[in-house]
Length: 628
Image 1 (cartoon, one colour):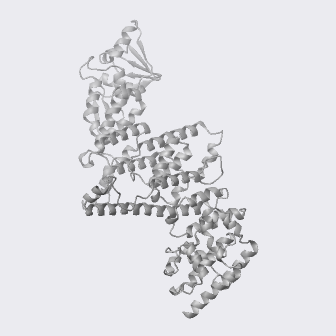
Image 2 (cartoon, rainbow, N blue to C red):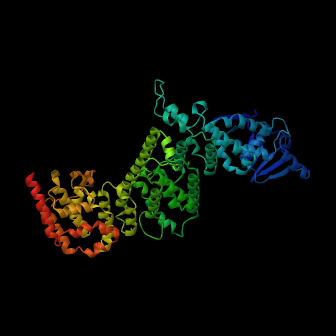
Image 3 (cartoon, one colour):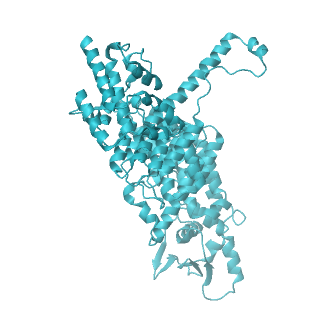
């Protein structure tokens, strides 16, 4: 870092009986009181350079005793005053980025300008500041940091503004063209091998070399500097987003459930220091949100959701929460399940996680994630314009449209897996209302779920955590479940799951038996009533068996135990036990609404006695296996 030395005489200031004096053969004739400290000095060297002291001494009457001058609220305190006094005596002083702001404010307070004497302190400090400190990166950063102790003086003297402008101009400059003495320079030096060859490990990060040093600034100065950087338009949005992530990691507290924010928020015994800290963090968070680049992808969805979690805990403004919710929804397909686990601090419910916030994000995602048309747009001007356009242009538009539609569909597939994983995490919460679980499950379009294994796992967890659910509630819970999209392992587990409604078990057993009957592609031997039931569920019996099974596999640790469930006899016995506990009421099937009537219309064609139906299915299975 750059520094400047002024004066040539040795330091002769000393302290005696709490009074600072100067060793001199001439007796002192001036006493200066600065913020509780007393200085026994001489008029001649001080008054010759300080216009304010001249005026104060002229206003007080002459006396034989040393004249006393009061300097209340002196900027910079005794340290800054002593720098100015030593300059007047010609004593050597050292100025750098750490003390130049205090010295500059003190010199301006004492009016040590060129009008009093040529080459005065104000002039020398200005030359050093503009020609040296503003040209160095770390010097400008440190100088700007030191202005927070003198905000009003620094603004009036233009120190803050000039530092911000200098820093912003250097951000857009490659570090090789700057004289750097900060952490980036040290990383570059450490990244040189013994033979002098420079490693390539840190070169890709050189574009954001400025972010870590700027993270040392206070929130107000950081906001002003980042606004100046953004207004230049030379820094890509992803680099600004990375800088904001570094700043948030530097100053925002780590959010965890163990800190028990809910109890702290509702406690009346919070200390003033805790309340003040929370207020500072809230301002910091809202500042970061206001600086987020408008471009999608400038920051990761994980970072946005972490900010949203912090906003929820710190009780940030509703506008900040809405903005983070909207931005998170735009990139929801990038999120992981752990990112959505936002602690709940609402006193309205005792749920572990804030499900309402996730529902709001999901609703925003569905609103903005509408797939564009998959065919070329038609012109309103009619056939003449369409005929004037070339076939190549039409084909190009069609391909672009298909690509956009495919990307939107891919995002929904990822979000469907994300939501099903999230449902598994929250399903074990005993305080989670059934309505919220169903809202989340039904928010995903049916085509987005290629398989329903993860959804079934979440339903199974919820049923085990909420044994008090009655028959109708269990039916509502399983309404979203599509048995056609369950894997073999999931069907085996569901068929012997005593917590499921009977109608779900019936569907599972039927599709499992139909899958076995259609083994080997011999589907023509299916009875007419089975074919009708398949047709009611939009399944073509002439298609290969793969149409009835899922295309995804279950990981080893997520597989269910299927012991004792290998033979058709055990499946029928499970159904018998289920029949003893519950009964399939046709009126219930018809009273669930129009959508449910069409779904279970095929069940009216089943025999009155379920035993006969399943024995017929099993006979078909045996016949087909014997023929094979």
